[in-house]
Image 1 (tube, rainbow, N blue to C red):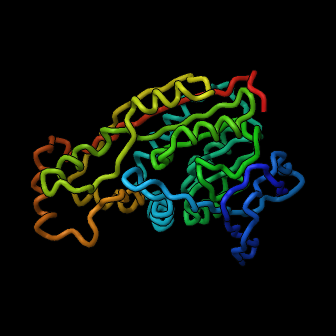
Image 2 (cartoon, rainbow, N blue to C red):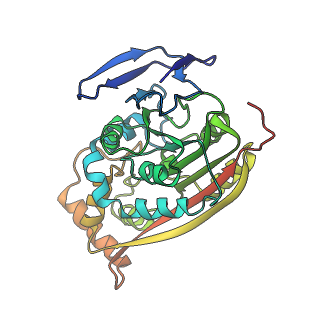
Image 3 (cartoon, rainbow, N blue to C red):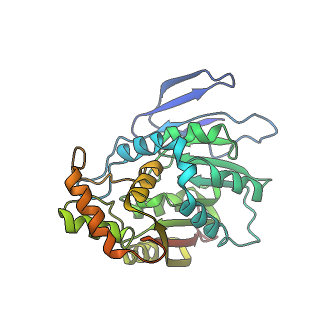
Length: 325
């Protein structure tokens, strides 16, 4: 992999280099380096194992969770994630189904790649293309790297992608961008790294997600126990205001059922998606409050079990072929 200096400086980062024998070393990298826009051909060079981290600009208090906490939480959940990721699998497959059957990218990016499940599916579907997996959690990348799929694994921020301009034909991102406070910045970065005619396909979550759990906690103590999500109307406005052409933008509810509240909270923790919001209560939840939560949630029970609603946003956008680099 070659490196090139960028005009726009980036905050300090670290690069984790891992040899084939498993030896690894973390070293500082210049703040203005990024992956060169002309990646090496797979036939010429084997895939390098590289991770770059840029978490020096945390989110504003009172908004979405601090990205450093998000990265740490998902890194810890890497080993358990796949065992409880049924919703994530279903949503990602639905997003793949929204891609044009005639799409033939030369280079694709799996943004928020997690354990690499969809990197592997993308590699199967676009077998002649080069793939890059980017995630904010280095623990996820280490887990994914061992299972193949993408050629390159890079730790990076969706709002400050460590990529050159016009390097990607397809940006695929499933259930990751809800953690980004600046979605307009995500769209601008997508425009920057996409080639003219390139496609961005994403799924995310919006307001209405986990409403049953949120309402139950509100009945207990009124504190912030559930992650916040952006309104669907904000997705609509930001996509319409972006320089990308909106091909599709839809909201689809998906309801899961659990035998009890502990099954739900266990799954959220195993996914790394438990409460990370500013203002959340500190310390352990007392027995009395937990019992009150169980009782409050019971009012939502249906014959199938306790419902948990996810409001899923699906978006497909395209960079105009007339847009220059």
